[in-house]
Length: 179
Image 1 (cartoon, rainbow, N blue to C red):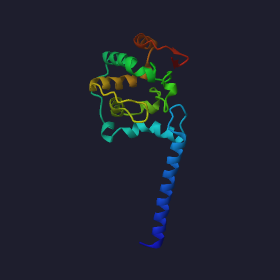
Image 2 (cartoon, helix red, strand yellow; image 1 turned 120 degrees about the horizontal axis):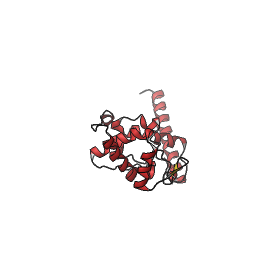
Image 3 (cartoon, rainbow, N blue to C red; image 1 turned 135 degrees about the vertical axis):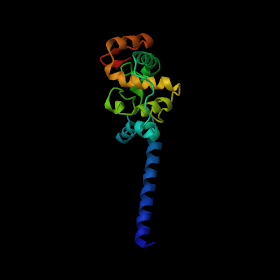
Image 4 (cartoon, one colour; image 1 turned 60 degrees about the vertical axis):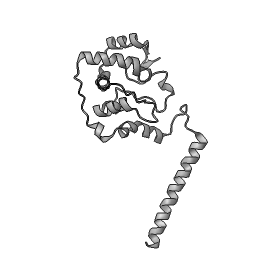
């Protein structure tokens, strides 16, 4: 190995060590408080965690549950009872709990969520994503697939559907925010 190659390798190792020490210092000095707004890089990583967290095999999974009014109604009730606390009845993520989450629960109506494949959404519902606040719910596969259908339906929710959800969980939406 030439001297030049050894110097370059040593410089790379030194830079990696310095970066690691800086991360260690930063974390021990500032901690990981969920009350502080995250750094931009942390927010970027969290936003992309949903796609990164799903294995390639899950991305191609197709929803075996047919889109029917009954499937949407069942999933709507499940979402209102289990998911709306963080994601809000309308999927906006504007809830009292979500205000203290970093990263916050995403707006499920927006392209960042709607562009995920059915398989990715299914995997996230079933398994969760570490360090994001999204728990792995497990549950029955058919129930989870129905939730995928409902997530796709969120941008088209009607006032009647929101009222039905409010009957399940009591959450009201005022000015776009649930509380």
